[in-house]
Image 1 (cartoon, rainbow, N blue to C red):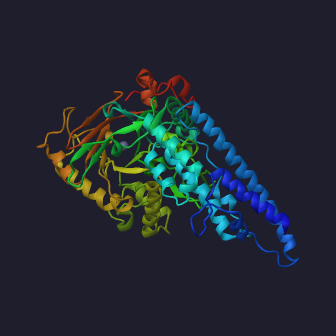
Image 2: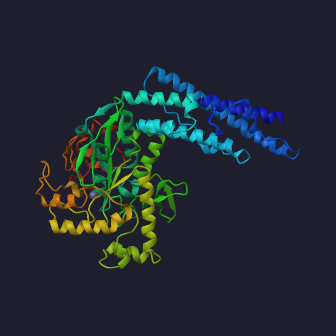
Image 3: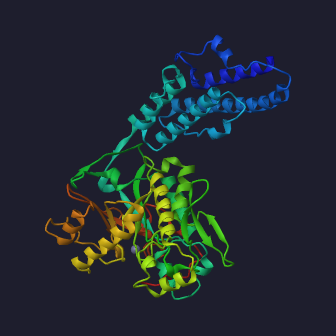
Length: 508
Ligand SMILES: [Zn+2]
């Protein structure tokens, strides 16, 4: 028993060292005294506890090691912080590892909550959300007694003060289409190859692009961080505050539908939520088996941000631009799959091949994926239901199209005030939209405030009190092959180019 007493006392001391003290829950909110420490020591009642005790000792010693490690990280961080204003964001180990059913519940709770809160605050600060990080720590009732928490708050404040405002009109926007997984199928000489070669990006290319951009200081932001829209559609400028050297950019991906035409052509088949509550891709192998993994932009970015939280501003990820006619995110959610009316040939074939297709289940599953994505920083935009060219389509066509989008896409992924025009078309020229532009009037009246086209310039941003417009740069085979110099602020095409591609990339 004595041994256990000593071990528990050591753990408590370690917690105190790490936290500055007082991170354990106790009744009067006062620092731990020797008397109170004893209350956490289980009295030895009988010899049958002896074997159990040995086990607990092992767990506790492991915990001591972990807390020592945390303490070391703290010290390391402190000395780094003294040298430079930017903290190293060492992530403590998973708090779950500390859970041990044999330990007193209060003791467990304090250890896990300390770690969880501290880890959360560090991620918030790493993502430049210093106010939220500070608030989180200050709101802990242990804050008053914790010198470590106070130290962290002081560092967060210092980091915040070092941030500078980034000019909104200089923020670039890059976009991708569905990434290619099996290049032997993508670049196989079939009639789709030319389009894939022009418009798609391979996973190794994507990973190199993202790594290079991260290394250069790029940070994902949302147009919603740049301009705020009130419920009447009045727009006001916001401030993006980042440490000097960081470069905000907007990321988007178009047509994340896993269209029928891409089946068996080397692409993922849909996005799913795994048992670990992560959004991943399914890929269907030749033998029909399914592999789950990072086979497209969403899970690749999720994994990247998990490793590099500072690639995301306030938790932002990218914008997913969705059409509706083949469903969304790989789910066949369009109403045609329910009614069986007005089916395209590939839709008819899909329903024939899947006699057990359950429309309601499909919608529910897609809704779940979208909900998880939104929770983890992703946003959705309309890409028009039917991949419409908004320049050449009539107002009536666009109205009918948007109603379909609202009924079959918005109903699955939720509301949005962003529209990313297909074909890089637009509802006006480069001049600000005129109030009497009927297409603008229609979209604005129907809740759209953010309008995005395609533009090869490095930046193209237009902000008024009525709308936000931004040009997007395609980081695809076509642009990389024909205009590598247009991308050299982002990455060097020579370092990124995938030799699996067929050359020349066909002209458009
Ligand atoms: Zn598109």
